[in-house]
Amino acid sequence: MAEPAIVLIEDEAEIRRFLRVTLHAKNYRLFEATSGADGLVEVATRQPDVVIVDLGLPDMDGLDVIKKLREWSSVPVIVLSARGGERDKVAALDAGADDYIAKPFGTEELLARVRVALRHAAGGAREADAVFKVGELVVDQGRRTVVVANRPVHLTPIEYKILTVLVHHAGKVLTHRQLLREVWGPTHVEHAHYLRVYLGQLRRKIERDPAQPRYLLTEPGVGYRLVGE
Image (cartoon, rainbow, N blue to C red; front, side):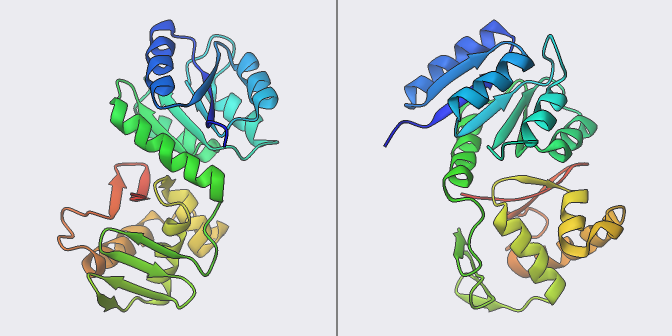
């Protein structure tokens, strides 16, 4: 099989050089662009498995690149940006990004996020009858069962719905609005307190230590992530 292809849209030369060495060492094919317009052309031409995009580009905001890209492509998009504020993360994810890494970043973290994105690119959303496993957590969507450390866990319908939405996007950050829209519908996107209540209940049922969760992670001010590996 061909090596996975990544399009990097980044105008900072040092970052491009660093990622070139890092990604080539892991057998990824890397195609580079230094502007948003050129990046969109590269994505259309190369049909990559993953796109990594900076938000501070010389010709357009990276958010606009993501929005334009989402008009015709579902390729996984990882934002790599010096803008690390909560609002920036929420805006990028709501615009259609799949993940967000703030600069400065760790190599292993970036590579892990790329692996998650590649799994989504290869397999798309998990099928309804798929079995999701991570650590001691097993979610069998065909049987609608949840097991932790070989013990069955009984969830309410809403708790189960939240968990399966997170399973479908495992490894990705979902904003509060995205989760509310998928679980309760578009009329409830401002009711973030619903999530705090139900996520607290879920953690008490599936985490060994709800105060230090292993599976259901909080991205402060942004949303939640179910670990994917």
